[in-house]
Length: 453
Image (cartoon, rainbow, N blue to C red; front, side):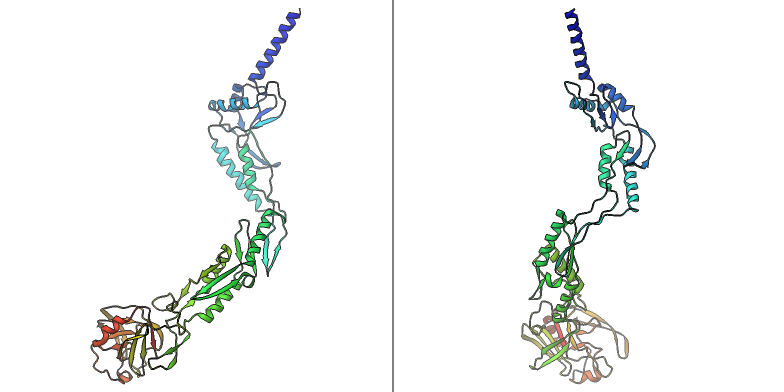
């Protein structure tokens, strides 16, 4: 009798052990589907036969309601199910609740792409009618760092909800947590980093160098307001920087200003700047200096310098002489009807010339210009008093105004008298005797100043 009971007990223990070794624990689920008490094969069959309800819940609200589809599990997923079985297996029955996520080997395009995108689109649509949270943010305001208050909103956190979706996309039904966007709080590490960044900005200085003159720009003097975003990118109010650059431009630029020029005779005269000269592009330079503050640069050189005439870059910017013209130039005296060409302070050539005709108001324009280019030979076309279709060939041509005034030989001219320009002058150009024109041409260089007075 006792032996019979022992045999029965052993059979029961053996049967229970076999059952435990071949069946999932009671409270195990895969993708939200209960598989407790099933074998691996039974579980595979259940998952393959599963109908997916394509409703997407966010909280208790259905945001997307699609048509039901069949699950995409196949026999190829049997090894994965076996791995989950081994993972949950215990010697004795376990009543712990466990839910495992299992991705089928064959991707369900509708669930992984279409339904997911519909969910994202719907959440974004809903967010348009909801209040966005307002982050606390540090800012620089007239030398003081202040922190704005945060404010809660009720917009959905789409990224967080989609992350939850990706964990549930093969569940029979998809129930997502209604995660909401949260504001950055006043005492958050983000705001602390913003404050530190602004403190560093407030103490910084950018030295702006124009020609050979440095201008230290202290943030405390030129930046009244600034903010910094979550990525630590500064945004600066550039009004103060712009005012500073404009002041530098007014005091140091030369475009259209009067030049003090010492003539060949030693007298000092004032000559109006025309095409020769330079000025700062204030908006462009303001932007560069602001970027230097944002990037923590200690100094920058002026770069956006402009001028007029044939070259739109400011001619004369690199001339550091006190008269801002230097010692290489062409000097033209209308009164003397003569030119002098200097190289590094040395007179290279001087010659009598004939300038623009005075009685018809075609005078050679006075001012400080520059040689735009050189061309040999050349055909000059335009008009002059009594000749609206002027066209003549010359061996050498060096214009210094966009209006077509320049130096050239005049083989046709017979009157080279000092007063010829009064009634028999050119159409505005400086006529050079052919015998000396090559020497004049060879000693003229593009962008060199031409002073006409």
